[in-house]
Length: 146
Image (cartoon, rainbow, N blue to C red):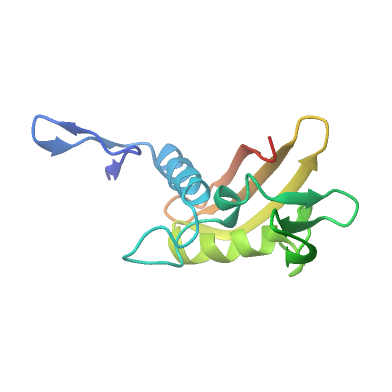
């Protein structure tokens, strides 16, 4: 089976495709994380919130995010670090999006870890590829609060 490559590329009038399922799923997950939530008019639920939080204020002690205009009321009370088992984490939100937008990855699990010194969030996604029943692991880094 052939899968679309991301970013989309046209070669000789056709979209470039790959036969590598793992690469295709990884590219799909990265696109989901890189797309600001609500930025795609055809489906405003597609995307992930961190693309829109790069200039907000992050309270490292409480793990909450504040608007740069209002330092009193957090925008999100969810924790940055944590796993998708805890509904009060952003990892749980990402897991829900993966379940909707990447059905080729079964039983996804997401772990997010905030690295204070590097100002990065390490994202670890695992699951099982539906077509092959093979274990799948994908890691990514989100640079935030620069």
